[in-house]
Image 1 (cartoon, rainbow, N blue to C red):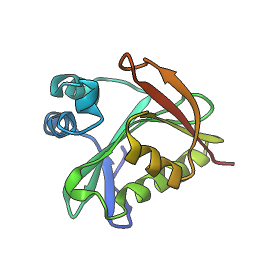
Image 2: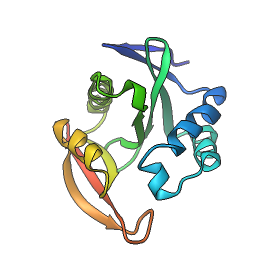
Image 3: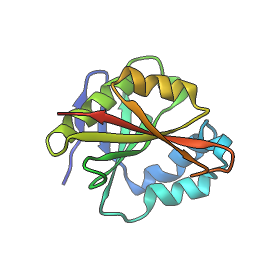
Image 4: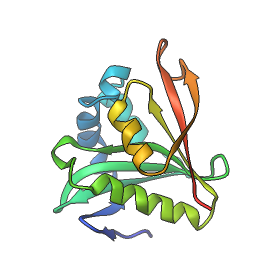
Length: 158
């Protein structure tokens, strides 16, 4: 069984069923999920469904839920950051960068790439990923919502 992983300024622990509903409510109230029309119930189903290729982590700061990380592996010659969020009260403390560094270091043990997608309108997320070594690879027009694109991102690890 996977245990809690200590990080500088926080920790990662496996997401439990009891985490899904309250976390889904918080995510549904944040962009990009609000703008993309994701409901709390849809996010809860995603967080709680059985999926052997998806590892889901609660990000903690000072013992509180500070965010979530979902990694899909295997994917396209490297894991895929399928969902990543730092909740608003916990942003600005470097925790997101610490988590992304951990994800890249873990991915580098088994792959040459770490992948992510970001909505084209999500300027802060695009800047975050760029600061952490991701390059924009291709727009995926209309993937989630007509009139918007998701931008495929790649971080080369080796």
